[in-house]
Figure 1 (cartoon, rainbow, N blue to C red):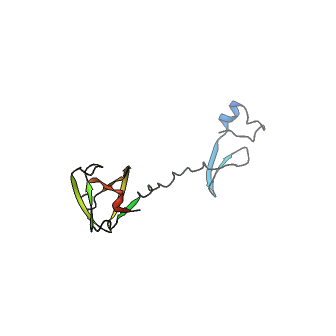
Figure 2: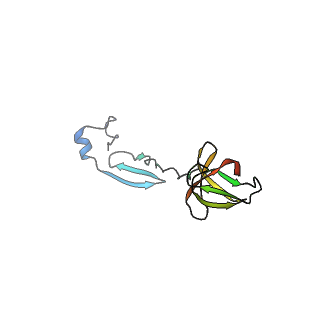
Figure 3: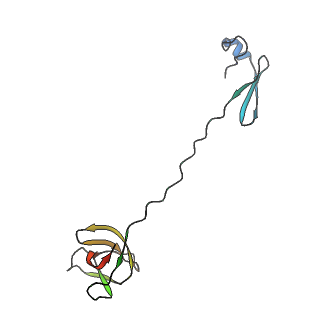
Length: 125
């Protein structure tokens, strides 16, 4: 910290060491004063606040539709009609989509949380 009041240039080294600064806070500014000079005001250091965390965008959803006279749709282990059946979901069920492979959506089974695949033809977007 330099004392600027003695000779207009900040004083020599000996003068800076001999200068005793006293301080306080006034209206958010640090007030420093030397016995030989007028008070010197220093602005407070700016605060840097972290940005608020943002939630990830929601995943797209689809709804099981009444197609081909069915009241349910099959969810399979892999995107293939011959793949093992892992669940049946009723018409009107909303499913979260996690991916797509051609005519198949990867979804999460609402009752078990298991991941499976459902054909696009049985869905409304």
